[in-house]
Image 1 (cartoon, one colour):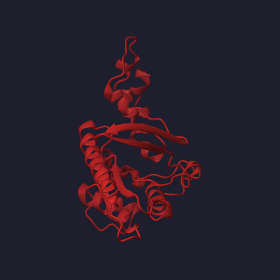
Image 2 (cartoon, helix red, strand yellow):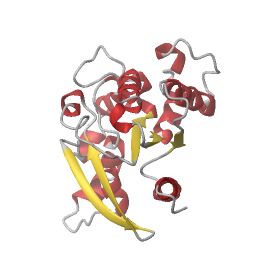
Image 3 (spheres, helix red, strand yellow):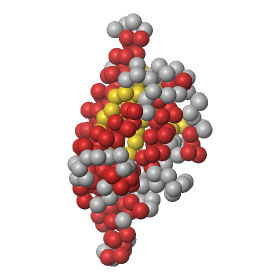
Image 4 (spheres, helix red, strand yellow):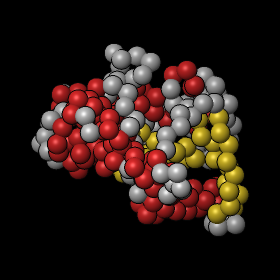
Length: 230
């Protein structure tokens, strides 16, 4: 594998990973191959964060925060997974919708004729306006900001190529990210429902820790206010 990574053709193929379904962590894994292949290898926290497992079905997790028991459900976003969960939830207090900013130039695995970000917008519209989530708080995680930044600055795959309504500068990362955020906000048909957007990099633990704490505090406060305890 280490020899494979030294091959010029392989490196060129990896550099064009946006054209096919290449794992986001491929370059990281190749660059750390010698360490990972060592017989005494022990995964680091970063290695674990870089691991990718596709979510199938519904994964339920319970944890305690500020003396409140929180139940979190992780669900698969692929088309084949949605029918398993979209009508399964009742009395949901908050929806954390995670979308990949860097997917603006990519297509779906199951349909290479559909833009990945457009599909996320469609799914978000279906969920944020769904009657089952009428009372739920909505938090939008615009994730993979680091990869989005790299694409905008260095790939030449400008946002306007895939979203002609984008009128900002090609190399303005913040302007592009805010443009995408605004497209999601427009899908919310209920003016009374507040959307809480956050730009995140999931592999940056300090970033995620701060954002998650803010989000959970907001959710807890909102739900306490609904039962007149706050």
